Length: 237
Ligand code: PXP
Image (cartoon, rainbow, N blue to C red; front, side, top):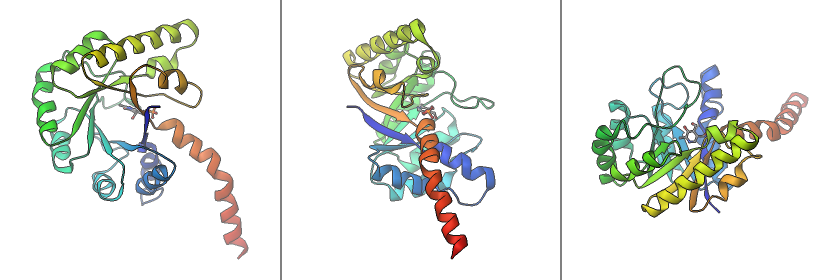
């Protein structure tokens, strides 16, 4: 079974909606850990729309499982990663106006800068993956620039239905097999939920899935009854 990295960005999104400290991404991470998360994933965006810099340092200090920092190829974020030293970093593309990461990194086009940044992060002991679309050229470029892993973008698979979904699953499988042949670890993520996760978990050589939105959404659904009961209890007392 692949490992599960839990992305807690959306807990921070909710916190940022009101300012203040609640809900706490750190508490969410510690709870996720108790629930069996094998890792915690966060994306420090250039616009700081959810995770803030101080979250990173708290998480790094308090969680027991590996921290995976999703990061754009932005000099400021690269500098932060070099100081933070998370166990893993996943290089992602980032557009200012996107709601969430849209599409994989064009590693081929960015190979020059990747050849500089990837080894410098890895020299610090950070295992670097590239978040790429399931295309053989992108997989080979990940190897060429010295990454240790790829994270296959499953967003197209998650949004597709019927034949289109089957076709995308095949592309993901082929990319995973190619990556394994090249000695790269295979991860995947984006848009995975309770209904669509199984075929992805079954892809050969799949080592890790990073899942955020569906888990945080489920946590709200399964937790709201208890939260209301606790408020009523407080009001009565
Ligand atoms: N992996 C990467 C590289 C991502 O950018 C994201 C979204 O932040 C995820 C995984 C998690 O995606 P989702 O929130 O749709 O599960």
